[in-house]
Image (tube, rainbow, N blue to C red; front, side, top):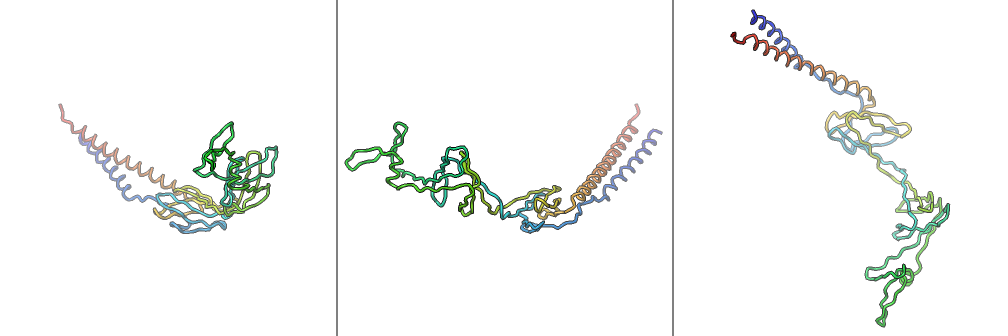
Length: 269
């Protein structure tokens, strides 16, 4: 009687296991199906009047690049430091007053490597070998004037413009510590994204949001409907949860059958 009952229940659990396993076999996982254009590397797209180039795509990640033709650059020239202008080295000199509005560039001369110098009493001297075989000490500044002449000086005021490394540069502000220089020039702006990430393209005051999806390793799709992407991802997660539940039923049913038959057919003592 006990064995017959075990057999009946065993068959029942086998039917349950077979049914859940068959459902796993025929179930089809939903995919991501979105509206939106697809792009590969080096493709271009325009959003809000701004043109982007697909710089890289792969491994679920991508990068877009665009050129900002009027990006703002800044540089500072600190007081009593050297700066390069028109292939010449200058020293930056800013007046030591409360609110300076200008600064001066004074040409710098470099001593050659075979010139020897010594410092005495806090003053640096050049050691000069005279024709009579004796040596004399000449202050460095005086020696430079003898060798190179008077240094060139150039004065700049706030609001003044000049050419710096090929760019029209403006003296925006001058303090006792430094001079602030600004100019505009092209700059490459990169935008990176990964699977499922939202990315905003277009002008800062009117950009459009997209969600990134990679239907293939070398292809990215930019969909203008991020909520739809999240909805489809939720459906996929729900499907996987149900499949995991069916696997659990299948495994537990098989284990139950093994346990039932194992206990039912134990030898009697």
